[in-house]
Image (cartoon, rainbow, N blue to C red; front, side):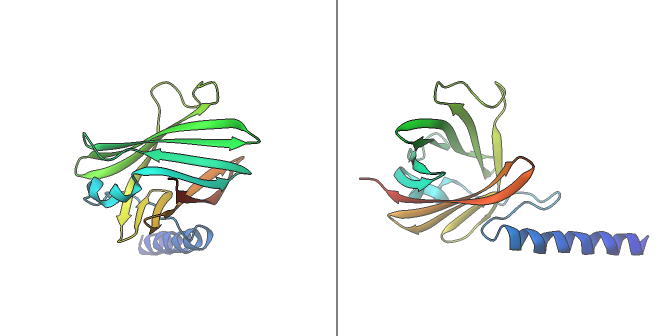
Amino acid sequence: MIKKFTFYILLLLCFDVLAANKFPNLLFLEYKQQSPKANLSVVKWLSGHWRGRAFGGLIEEVWTPATGGSMMGSFKLIVENQVQFYEIETISEENGTLIFRLKHFNRDLKGWEEKDRTIDFKLVKVTENKVYFNGMTIEKISDKEINIYVAIKDKGRTTEEKFTYTRFK
């Protein structure tokens, strides 16, 4: 029994090391780990209009100030003057912590996820200039620059993607 337990712990430690090497800017909740206490004050600097480049095109995010226990954001990707897709996003205070939710939409606003489904990122950790959600990190570089790192799974392969933004206007 002890050998099995020791093997399991070693396996988990190896996975953590591999994940840290493969995804250097991301954190993931450990098994049964609870999200830390937090409120929207830790991401108030995200409010505003942001632009950058990714996926061969222009990316834009617009975030509202915190009201009603949430912030609302929108994302769009434009390649060759054509919108490729949109996202509607929220960061909400729930049960004393934060959760980031999003839904994807084609350019004609037909949703990718099922009607009542969202992609949820639970809070993992907050530092002075980074907010780590499960598989996504929002990093404040300055009042005019942010980075967002996301684990994206495509065709069975997961990669860490970086979105670099500057404040627009």
